[in-house]
Length: 143
Image 1: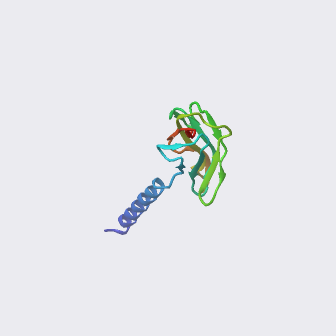
Image 2: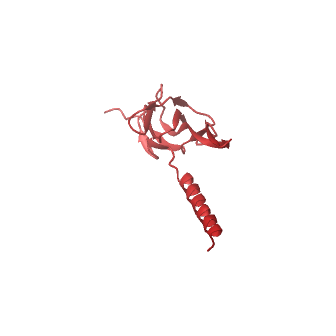
Image 3: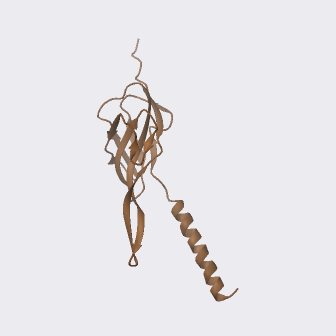
């Protein structure tokens, strides 16, 4: 193989590895309530985030329908605070009624990057965790 062709093949391999590494970047995720969980009317919402993520708010809705910045119609939201390494948490200001709900974390990541004049500039973009379904069931009073 000629030197020029060898350099070209090495460049292709490096580009492929770079694309795969970018595609495999970890995402923020819902931790609690977990999918399908049954919780009390005042659950604590916990999400896992990676370094550099800027958590904005946790949203709660009765439908999983979302836009680029959250649920189409939410029934509540709270502003998460850091809680240990790689975790954020918050609770709603009011209790939820019995029923089925979904929650998501809206966060920003500096994932929109451009090279200008040989320098790389990255700008924040909104991201959402996948809507997580959970059920609120108030405890039955003791007989």
